[in-house]
Length: 154
Image (tube, rainbow, N blue to C red):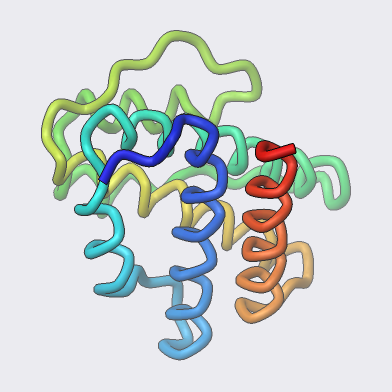
């Protein structure tokens, strides 16, 4: 599936909403099988666009956390380091910098998916610390996805 390029932010919001839904059920931030199925449906170029959108959305969540609570959180590279190549970790870290520089899309689909999951997780952690429940985060992401779709079509 290759959605139009403007659909990347919408897809990123929906992936985060799916993870937040699953986190509500599981009681911990964990990706669902649905996320993997959805992710696998996108080609590499589309996944790159979604990673860029996830990076922007995660940067916003981290900025809100920093501005409102003075709290900084970082990506937990321990579990990710065992699951992805070193280039994927470099890309993930670059994507969440306040002013991201150049980043390379990880070569393998597995690594791209794990970077996406890490970015979704980091967003959820930031919003959770800001007082949002997983259900609220999922609803907020779905509303943002709908707004992204509406604004790009008009």
